[in-house]
Image (tube, rainbow, N blue to C red):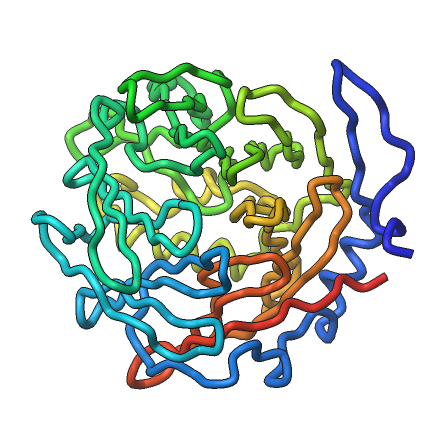
Length: 375
């Protein structure tokens, strides 16, 4: 039964229901290395595009894929069969150009929307080339000047941030969600005081406090599509499913313990942080105390166009690969995927994934069919 993965005893609390995804189902799927494994027969394309150094990617409503080609500085559009359709746009600040920090934003049809914080605009492309751009206006003043989603009425979802330096370590930032009307150049906050990233206070070489995020620290995230917003607090862990107006209609709770941080995990993080921030962390002993005993179980990745909530579950054992799981808006797991050390997932669809597999000459791109979640 499909509903075996979800507790049917939902509670009606504060005007919305709470759904619990059972811990035994999650643990069994996560620990079974053969479960949810992507195979060559799962390839959804009849032809494969050329190998590229790929940046971000997105799946369009028609099944086409748009991705940033880092070598050529182009936006590439790949058809539903895997054949290259077009290479449009260019790196830069002029019309039809975009910067290195640009991201894709959902847009109706086969229009590819590229949001660029460097120019504070959204550029629209089709397979014919650049169509037009739309300024993001004063919304550039929010914490993250890139939209998380585009709602059916054309308004956009942005993050507003509150960075308040803490006096004790660790502390958590908070953030809010704002719905912004580009035409009116105005917005309204739909949620505030959501738990954000866990930060740690260190003493820099000059003695002044500075702040850094340490791997495995807590982090709140949000994602959305035309119909829903999902906010995730991985300290629970739970996912609030909201309407575009910010009303919570469902809370999905993962009833599973957080994985233990292994010595291998800890040593890897310490080496990476020390290399990146040598002046921030004066000694390994201090850094060691900032690494928690447990790491987060799951992270929110995306909400696809068919209202699927994609999350990644992290394994508790060294050498195991993360497990990607698609939850329905009702909290029922529908699909899953487990890659390998050379393959990463770069875009999520309704039962499909775009993967990039590392090769000497670049990344081999493929559209893969996700595995039906084990019953």
